[in-house]
Image (cartoon, rainbow, N blue to C red):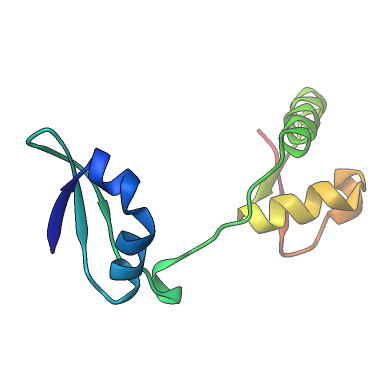
Length: 106
């Protein structure tokens, strides 16, 4: 592990990234304060989760509010299922009985 100032890191970023690829950790410092690190990553270290776009989230909130006003709501068990539900464009009652959507009455 080595420590470098941010100024030095800017000048030698490619070399520092190559060092991380070889397994070395690089600590970035602002003055004498440690502020960040460049660390090696493997495929196992990365867990990329699907994210909703702003339009998908807005549609979800509108749909939830409409269902709340109707007296029912949709319970989505994961972000992936929420995205699929929003992409389906089907009304919530068309999805009744599937394992990815459960109806919940207050």
